[in-house]
Length: 381
Image (cartoon, rainbow, N blue to C red):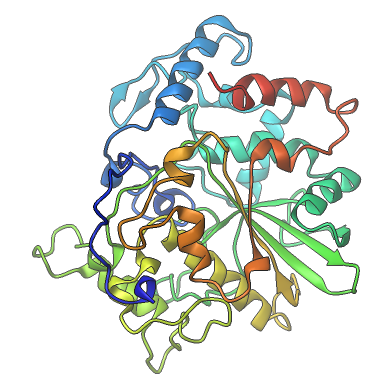
């Protein structure tokens, strides 16, 4: 299958524009504050442009941001869709607690040491949707049953040493199974390692415990850069320093660790990983998160959160066609079709819109939250 071989040439069709993507590597999976921004800067998508325009209007004409002005700096320049104070990017009822939760659990914010003022941040979107209900067991279960209707319970995630509840954010494993830390270093949630945007721990009706890792998208979309051939800053061009490091982490067989992808039960094996879909976004992220879940399960006897199975959820606004409907040149197919060809068990991967994920929560109890999410995120201009 060409997805796990050499990257095939783009089909002779008009391709959707490649776009700036806030690379997850920097912020959530850790990278040099890179990824999220500068490296994958291309044309803005229609959805991203629409959401920027909507954010500017909301800053100027609504009470959502409580008077916080626009013109905050992003990538060194003042932008009308960036707030002057990132605290107001968070839903008011959760604002102070979220900041304390991040601080006391040693979690990194995207792009800095405090909430980003960028109104299109997917980290902020994830928190605004899920943090308000994370302590409400019955409501978290309703979300879980959108992912899998056979789940009957949700369990507290005790790896959050401060404010443990039923949803954890920027979750990592207890041990670095993906070879992402330098020797002697510990995993840092949200920085320089594969971190899970949101994690739920659930029980199936058959009694089995499940990990439910959630990857949250907002306006992200991607170019066709191959992360397996990326150079490291300061090294000669073409030496692929960063790319080789990634290959060593995930596909090399050496005395320190096995070939993680080849030993995966969920991911399809390849003859040539260097030019495979696994090192192209967004599949690079999905690959790492799949390996993370598998390694958590393989080491369940030593991990604090012990599970025997997982379901990986990709939360994407249905209006983000530049992510969902882009035809990728290495497959000639859309994002979902491309990724599903890499998976052995299709039931372990779900795409859900944010609005659908929260469709069954009690909106009498959470009327203010629903109105906030509707006005800020769910109305497409």
